[in-house]
Amino acid sequence: MRRPIGLTMGDPAGIGPEIIRQALARREVRARGPFVLFGEARLFPRLPRGVEFRPAGEAPGRARWTAGRMAAAAGRAAHGAVVAAVEAALRRELAAVVTAPISKEAWARAGLPYPGQTELLEELCRRRSGARCRAVMLMVGGGLRVGLATIHVALRDVPRLLSAARIVAVGRVMDAALRADFGLRKPRLAVLALNPHASDGGRFGDEEERIVRPAVARLRAAGVVAAGPLPADVAFHRARAGEFDGVLALYHDQGCIPVKTLAFASGVNCTIGLPIVRTSPDHGTAFELAGRGVADDGSLVAAIRLAAEIAARRGLRQA
Ligand SMILES: [Zn+2]
Image (cartoon, rainbow, N blue to C red; front, side, top):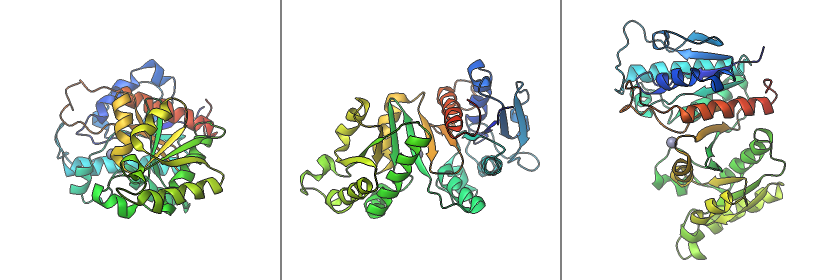
């Protein structure tokens, strides 16, 4: 039997449980099974064949949350499901983990100190496998693969957090993942500039000369095919036209806006650089839609498809 793909329910008050139910009702998705679903049993009263349920993150007694409303109890439950799934993946019981969206605010209210699931995954992988892994968020969609050098931080903190070492580390993770996980033989990376027009020769900003250019030189010296610093407003067009296989963006919105604009209903957030395969839809909990049966499962379906493909390429399961 094929090694299963793990699914986590996400924030139980958000759209996670309903898009999982929708996705599992699709023949295309069930063909990628078997699955192990981690979450609260009462949210999944009926499951199709090929889906094993594992209770995780169950709130003790009566749950103190309602669909559509952010709550600490729901955040804690979502967290429990992610931890259980990642641990099963690290034990090689799962070929991949696909996580439904969580609420970062609910996690904060529950006292969970992670800005997002990516950061939690990195910590769990470091702690349990002892591996020195660096989780990089890769947005896939609209013909683009975009890696982020910084993720959930204030924009004013980005220049201080950027360093040549950080860009080199992210570039190397992207290069390795584009080869191993996406099957590209010699991936070409575009490394973006921070300032408009890559600072126009230092007229507004110096991060390009100080940080990005040395990083690109070091990547090239390490055998990575990299170009940059490239003005960000043009680089995505060039990547889509086929000039680059991956774009290394320096901050969250620089990288996420192009992908979400082009592929909101089918974009996937893929965590690369970890010993486990993890993908997730590119949207949030959408509390305003939860429980109304109107949420779109397109991005989750795409995330399951990509997880299955990467797991097969890594030899973790049969295609
Ligand atoms: Zn985000």
